[in-house]
Amino acid sequence: MKFPEYKTLALETKDEHVLVVRLNRPEVLNAINTQMGRDQLDLWTRLSAEPGKLRCVIVTGSGERAFCAGGDLKERDGMTQAEWQAQHEIFERAFMALVECTLPVIAAVNGHAYGGGLEMALCCDFIYAVPGARFALSEVRLGIMPGGMGTQNLPRAVGERRAKEMILTARPFSAAEGLEWGLVNRLCEPAKLLQEALATAQAIAENGPLSIRQAKKSIHYGLQMDLATGYRFEIEAYNRLVDTADRREGVTAFNEKRKPRFEGK
Image 1 (tube, rainbow, N blue to C red):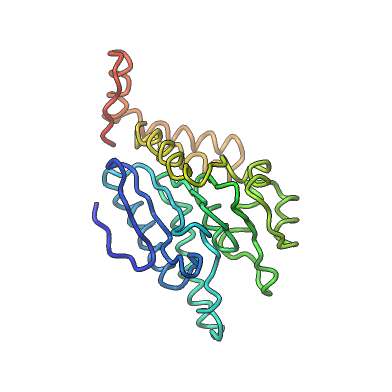
Image 2: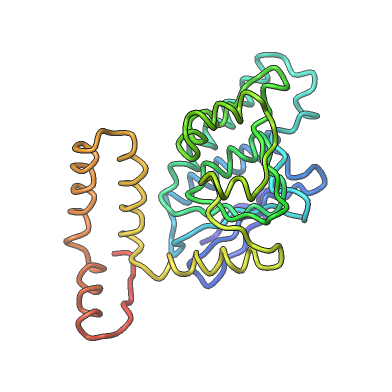
């Protein structure tokens, strides 16, 4: 699959089925400017519409200091209200495109993730992080509030009361605390972070790609429904898989005691 030459993202395909996306503004701790918002909106929309052979995505930051420091406040300095809101509209669409991406997305948090950087990680399906990473939703210190789904995704990850404490105090917390609270799935040493994320991505990529997409959709939307409605949604997603070549291949491979060859059909 061919992508445009993004100005703020560096892309690398691993083993045909896994895409590594690096936020590529290390000189400003990978802060999100308008161009990065446009680049991400295009990328996540493109991946959902035409994934090609890709089956999993990893998002990480360039450099060793930060995953993403949040919004680029130097670019925002002096913006009019109209300019600020026009920029934020792009960001909002990019966050939604990420959270609704049909492919699984793993955040490999290689350094600090503040503000919009943490919100970006929370929009991914799960998070691996280095022990030295620090996290915060610090927007209230700037006279604003989280606007990248932070007030929605954080309480879903850590619970309402802890999320209120974290957002209202704006205090940073450690990767170890994030692990304890359920925000982070795994801590990885810096030299092994990408390696471990890749191993998980490749394990996902070995499974039926249609199954993965349907299961992700069922979990994501089912959590927004009551149990019975969510179960009905699950069965609709399940039934879409019964009459597929991949389902037939999976059962045949099991009975022939061999590894299945899924093609996403």
